[in-house]
Length: 115
Image (tube, rainbow, N blue to C red; front, side):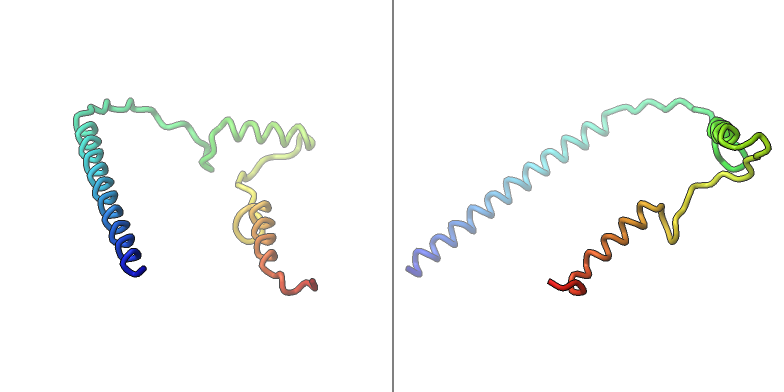
C-alpha cells in the first residue's frame, strides 16, 4: 500500500513539473513575440489639442452657465451664484458612501441582537 502511494505521489510530482515547464515556455515565447511586435510598431504623434477654457474656479463655462440657469429658474431673479463646489457629506465622501459604510459596519455587530 505504501509503495502504491509513493508511486502515485512521484507521478503527480513529475506531471506537475512538466506542466509548469510547458507553461513557463509558453509565457517566455509569448513575451518575446509581444516585445517584438511593440518594438516594431510605430506610434504616431498625438495631435496637440488646446486646453478647454475654464472659469476662475476651474469649472467649464458651460457648466457654470447651466448651474446659474437652473438656480435662476428655481429661485427669484435676485439670486447670484457665488461658489460652485462638489457636495460632501459628513466625514469623507457623499451621502451614499456614508450610508453604505454605516450599513457595512453595522453588519458586523451580529452579537448584539438576540437570536
